[in-house]
Length: 158
Ligand SMILES: Nc1nc2nc(S)n(CCO)c2c(=O)[nH]1
Image (cartoon, rainbow, N blue to C red; front, side, top):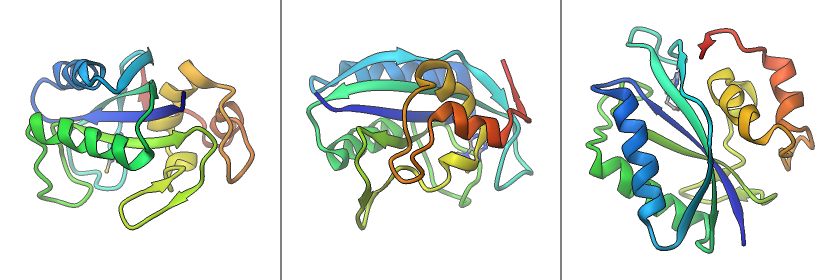
């Protein structure tokens, strides 16, 4: 069964509860099993820096869904939790990004996997390293552990 890794983030409202609800909703989907969840990390905002700190986690899921099917589920969770896309890269109640889907390399209208920025984001790599240090980025061939050794964990706190 395919294994995928997701990054989840929130910096509006009760961020911890938003993350917990998002994981619960993913696991409640009949076609998704959440098999690992990282600790919650407080992280400095990247991209649009004039906003609240984020809380970030990573999750491992097993699913028979295609990557696009998993994206549909993830976007459904975002909508259910009130995700409003006002400012690009701005604050959000919840954000779910697909990082890896097995060792697939996907470039479609809707989806790029591996996530195009995952290799340069400590707020993604620190939680992901906690649950999948040995997972391999299918484009670079580097493990999560190796990617993290290049970015460092600046701006990420347990
Ligand atoms: N620390 C941090 N910065 C972010 N900038 C954006 S956009 N996002 C949303 C995910 O792309 C985040 C995030 O989740 N955490």
